[in-house]
Length: 319
Ligand code: GDP
Ligand code: CA
Image 1 (cartoon, rainbow, N blue to C red):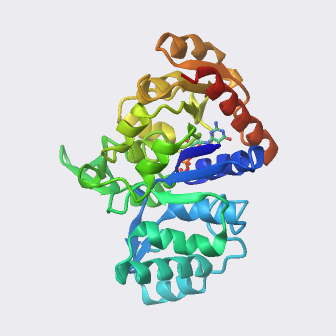
Image 2 (cartoon, rainbow, N blue to C red):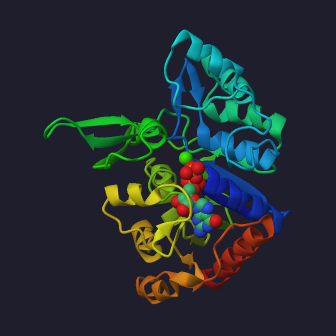
Image 3 (cartoon, rainbow, N blue to C red):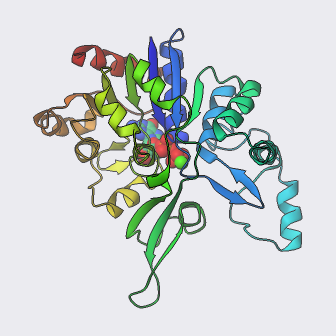
């Protein structure tokens, strides 16, 4: 079975651990969000790709859900001693090695897809990890500035430095219009038996992947069932600040509204948490098959149950 999964960072990675456990023989291709990417200290950083690679490769800081296990911060202290910015973005020594290797390869002319493949040769994540695009796309957040002025800042600055405090008036994946799907992405979707949307951020993870021209279209056209799992439970994100990103694009943070935002043309099936049973009729009325099951990824085995439920729903809706 060939499964394509669109994924952000922490939510996507946790789900992938469960999926790999549930169907160890499946050929899993992950289309990873790269709109969180940023260049700091001259280094190209791809937080979501790295979270997936470290999580599935056994190198993640499990407590945090991101960054390397056994991390040290000597370089950060050295940067701070020079007074150089930014000091708000946590970069550990082990993690920095990844960014140095990536930046060196990009500088030598390799596309991000090949760089990612090279990094994965070390981590052996057990899935094929494809960047959503080889082009540069960076999410920017529009916030109010003095008076009725507005200004845009990089997603990471808003999310990490400002803790998503200033209200997001708009969210723009800068560069997406001009981006092409990453190497192998459309081919993987075309060959898939099943496409899954894990509980990742619908706006700044899955939304930005879908903003790359050609990817959404390929998902609408594929014969494979497309099944998603809600990242919103009981009207709130399970962790993180996804509600703030949904508010910015005018989508209420509920399990049914996220499904409607993805659209019935894209989604064939949608799983909501048992607490959101009341959402099921709304989603079904829109023409999307919907079921309620526990959606908390508290362990690999509970997450594997979620993955199996998604596979079951896919079998039900198969055209
Ligand atoms: P990020 O890139 O690190 O922000 O990670 P993702 O975009 O992949 O996932 C973030 C989303 O995962 C958030 O909207 C959370 O609500 C959702 N999430 C995290 N843990 C869980 C969980 O246990 N169950 C569900 N249903 N959603 C979760
Ligand atoms: Ca992310």
